[in-house]
Length: 252
Image 1 (cartoon, one colour):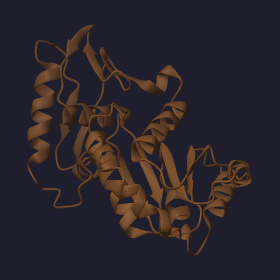
Image 2 (tube, one colour):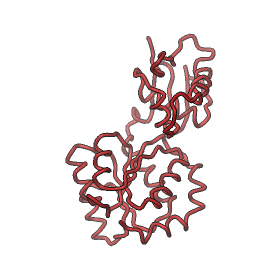
Image 3 (cartoon, helix red, strand yellow):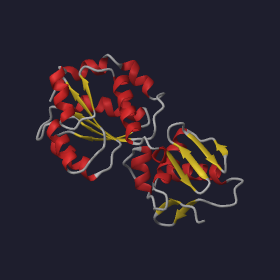
Image 4 (cartoon, one colour):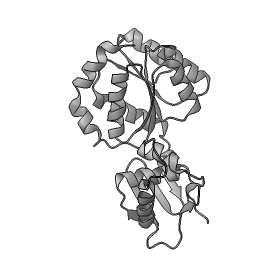
């Protein structure tokens, strides 16, 4: 646990937290492994304001389990953790074939410390205290590095195309203007094209909520999205699977 630096990072960067929502980032899901609950709450709130879905683990063993069992675009791992230290978590993840980019946070900022972290399997190393704007920028870069090939940045279903980097959506070459939440909804559906996406999955991955999946917020947004991507087009793509959820698929 490295509490001596977290609070200065948070208090010194209130403006960064306010500006995070304006950052242009691809829709990402990240894992933050941090045992300082106040620092973790600050980070996760700021990341979510920037449009990033965040899971949090408060110790090394839990983080290792979550990092192994779930797919993340980037992991942010504190170096000193209870139950299993951060470098051990990273080394074990690499042994298990988990290749998601890892950014190490640590109060140990000397050159030798950074070299040790990178050799353990980390992709970037940010000493504390840090500005959240820099942390966000580094996470963005790592996320883009992971999805560098164009096919990972552009989703296509039939004549519908979504560009994760430019946040542009086109159907049959025509621009489709979406609100940020509609874009995230479509992005998640297209990422899982051909598969049933449940209401709970949408709440957790698009809204980042954990509440009654019977809420009508999903129905409202799906209806708006459907009208925008299917209006003036003959072929429907977005289907409601009664009693299960939704699916986007090109029937050919």
